[in-house]
Length: 435
Image (cartoon, rainbow, N blue to C red):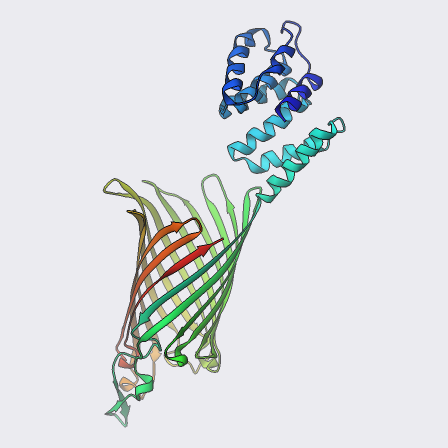
């Protein structure tokens, strides 16, 4: 294509009178070394060809082919300033923009080239093929499949104590939980599948993702099926970014629909001091419980976070810290405990380790009911909940598209109503496939 484009330079450009005949330079051999030598031969002629669009188009083409992209852009810009209609300079300038990462600027110029009526058929075919290739870069689809095996000591999410205390007529009564309502441990198989679609636009990005997760175990009554979808719209600015997203999800437990949620999020992010990015989130979530509509609620979350680049023993890592305020409003006057208020803190740290990446996440949440939970439990006290969890995960690439995963998860929940004390730990290993 280079010789054809070079011929187009000769046909579509005009040269200044003081500039010598450049036709001999079109016969240069192809390849980075040859094109670098050609650029060196052309350089001494610059003082004579300052007004020649042909010269700068030829020089810019040689510089681009030799890998000197920054200088090539300058030369090609000069050629187009001298002659905006120089077809070869337009073709090469669009290619240089693409190689520099300015995809949409390259696409826009490429469409202008296709609108010309003087393109030779073979050049038009190549430019049209390039346009299709670049258009494909604006749309990306990815799929992921995870298969993991593990052990969980509380598959059914049962309370930690084996006995509960009821309050009847002001007197405490101790009851032993039926074994089927106590914690059941066992092995499980966890399968996750996801599909992501991304579409890039000038100054914005669309993301859509669908996830399906299924867990089967020795206790079929604890089998899980989770469905979730999310759409995001992101608009980056020079010094900030704005993200808006909506999501919906369903959770099935033991073969029955348990819970559904829909969510809207608005995020504003901007760079901060010392390589830390700042963000502010506002999230609204509608929570719907199938079969227990008196538990339905609307939750608002306002959060501020920092994402920082941190060096550990000379190795760059990413530390994410977030603090959020929670307000959970009951949609039914009959919900036990009424409205809830609380706060949440989250720390996420990931850093490279030999042969892979290690990630740890620590979360703490505290919620306080605004009314007594139930007169049958702890004499109708206003319930509070403290929930914390730790996630540690190691990822190691095995081969392109395949990653080994090992995860440990531990959750601890305490309350002044003992029925809500829980303890859950799991350990799992498996493979993740990306394609």
